[in-house]
Length: 236
Image (tube, rainbow, N blue to C red; front, side, top):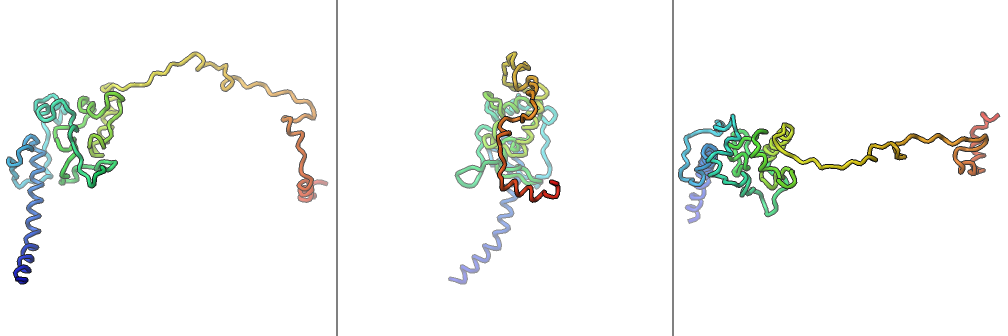
């Protein structure tokens, strides 16, 4: 009995690497098909893998005009009126999420298991003219860009978002509020003592010191004897 169990365990450990390798290939095929056709993600039995590699990137039909994707029926069918990051849940260890999202979702030909809202959809392209997409990552009340821990965007895409938002604001495509400050006439006046002309120095009479308290100071006799002893060669 013990010998048969040993033989079965030995065969299991021989077959395990092959099975795990096939499972990893199947997962990579699923990720590739998800990037090609995101709408088929709800039907996992429709995935077909054709011995393709993740190195071949799928070119989006909206790469020249990425802002047209947000007005298309495909976008409305998938996201509706909600932002692209709505309902996204980050994967992390433990019950407390980390204070920073992952650096990037795509490393070479490898894609993480749960890409961020921007990396999971190849039709979402960050561009400073894609105003509708940028507005989804800006608070309508304060005008502050949402933190990536709220939207789930990776740090690489968050950096692109910040650059695109700043460029759009510089080009006048995005509105931003500048606090209004009321300036009074006294602000630019030179009559204040801090910015006015310097008063002339007081007139000194002979024998008077500049500071009145300086004339009442008497040196320590012991210190005076020590100084005279040190410089006796020069006090002739």
